[in-house]
Length: 283
Image: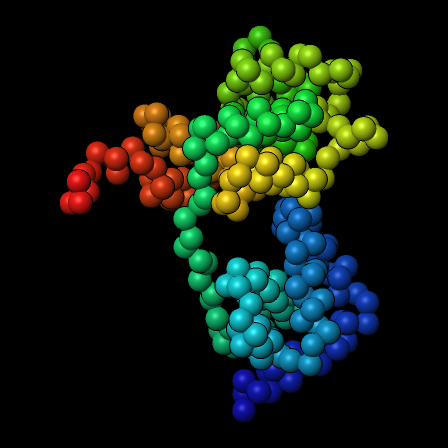
């Protein structure tokens, strides 16, 4: 009865906030905690769907599970709803009861898709548009996230020291990565003023994440790759190939900008560095 009463309070609070101020509360709370605009947008999306439902928090998540939504979707929705409830609950006893009744959905432990060096080389060679070719090159050569490619500026490139300064990346962290001589050579022949963003559309605007995803996906399909390829596939391949070449995992962690070494260790599971030394019983 106590838990049901808590849910009733929550639903009443939800109804009150749904009049229009809930979204501002979410966005302002994200800003105060230093969350990215992407995180705030994601939270608003999931909370909006929750508030539009006729369910309490627990019922809403169970409904997603019963409809067989992906674990990642359920996990994201759960985080967003918990954050929302904290914003309106003021750490009350009732709120703690509700939060404790919500599941901690585990993240799927899927291994990343890795391309071979030859596949990436073929993708680059098959891409005729110089801008598009460079996007693929730099994504792989420096292990950049798609947001880092989009926001890369000319003054982030050090042509003398052969380094790229990635600024205000995920977690508001800066880092230094290598500047491939091949990428540097091709960047120099770009027919544009060397100022502002490196990659611009024909309209002079930044590329969108969706556009870059399509560029890389089409390049993969063009050469007959059947795997699901995205900008992050290039980053995964960058890390795995460095590991296979003997680069210390600690350096790879820094190059990728990971906060925890456990995130980087996933590449030890897809690297063939040691696996290829094991002989199959069939052979």
